[in-house]
Image 1 (tube, rainbow over the protein chains, first blue to last red):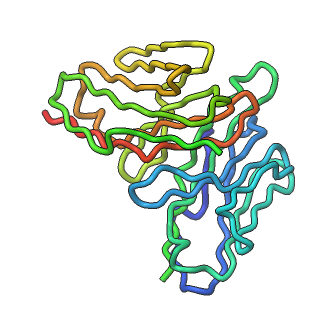
Image 2 (cartoon, chains in turn yellow, red):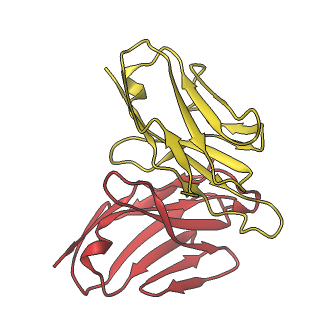
Length: 117
Length: 113
């Protein structure tokens, strides 16, 4: 499968616990995005990376959230001290802005559904 | 920041009829407008997109139109089929830099056989 992959697909945790999600982008894509989607809503931007550099973070991203992309390939999103309001689908997307590429199209992964009890 | 409004929130059509979904955006600097289709429990999938230097784009039964002056764009699906039933999201971005997408709230389309 050459698309964007995410792991795990589902995560159930208790309030106060830490969770970490992983995203593997399409291999030739240098940009990686994290979005959050709650039921019945469109995805909301959280943060994005170009290679290993985190270029933008949403105001939605509280101090409990941290994202990394250490080698410019896969990325992790960690949520510390989870709250019930963190329950959502966390979507990863990737794109390429390299010369000769389309530059804009973002391709989404299947998401990680987080449930905080 | 950018704000994208999408209407209607639900749309029920008879198979074979056309469906139209409309979106407005607030940031005149936005220049890339994709549309995603999301089936229940699945990932959003890009179905068509348009850049600000084009007024209309068509791909088989789907088409998108863009009015930069009015800051609105629309998705048109003709000859709807039951497999078109899904949630559709419009989005906008200052795409030249490949930046974040701002999504509309979604339209749930139901195609009745």
